[in-house]
Amino acid sequence: MECGGTGLFTQATPAISDLSFRAVSCVGCDPPSCINHPVKNACSQNTNKTCEECLKNVSCLWCNTNKACLDYPVTKILPPGSLCKLSSARWGVCWVNFEALIITMSVLGGAILLGVAVCCCCCCRRKKSRKPDKSEEKAMREREERRIRQEERRAEMKSRHDEIRKKYGLFKEENPYARFENN
Image (cartoon, rainbow, N blue to C red; front, side, top):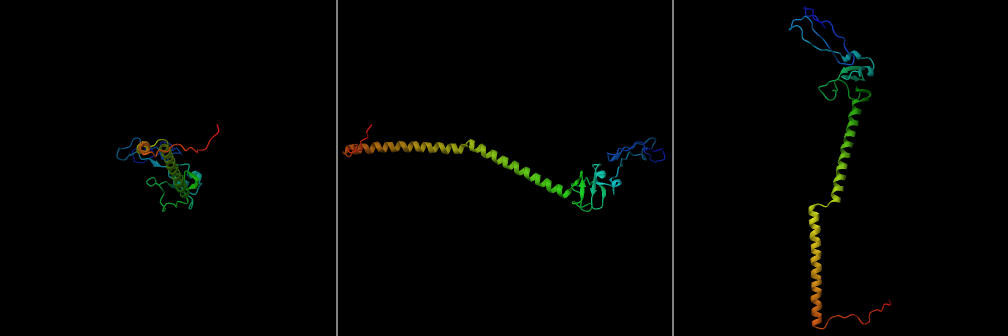
C-alpha cells in the first residue's frame, strides 16, 4: 500500500496466499502518518467454504458446527469453548478433532512414559543381578569366613575328643564285623 502524501494507503505488493500477512510499503508519506502495518489475511474469508480450504493456512481453525474458519487463538494452547467446541474444532487436518487429538496424545504419552519406566526397571534389575553390590559381597565374605572357622573348630574338637578317648581306652576301632566287600 502506498501513501501519496494524503495519508491514504494503496496496495503495492501482492499478497501470497499461503502466508497470513501481506507486505505493505509506504512511499512519500510523512513519518507520523505512515506506519508499516501488516495487513492480516483473515481466515474468515474461508468461512462457509470447505475445511480443506480453511486449513491450507496454518494459522486458521475450522469449526465444524457452524462451518466457520477462525483465526487460531495463539495465546492459548487449546481453543476456548466459547470459540468452538473441542469436539468440532479442526486444525492441521480435517479428520481429527481436538478431543480425539488430546486423548490420543495422552495415551501415546502415557504409553511412552510407561515403556521408558519398564525399560529402566529391567535394565537396573539386570545390572543388579549381574554384579552384586558391596554389602552383598561383604555378607558373602563374612559367611564364608564363619564357615571356615566353624570347620576348624569342629576338627579341633574332634581331635580333642579322640585324644580323651585314647587316654581312657574308649577309642573306637574299626568294627571287626564290618561288611566284606569283594573287589
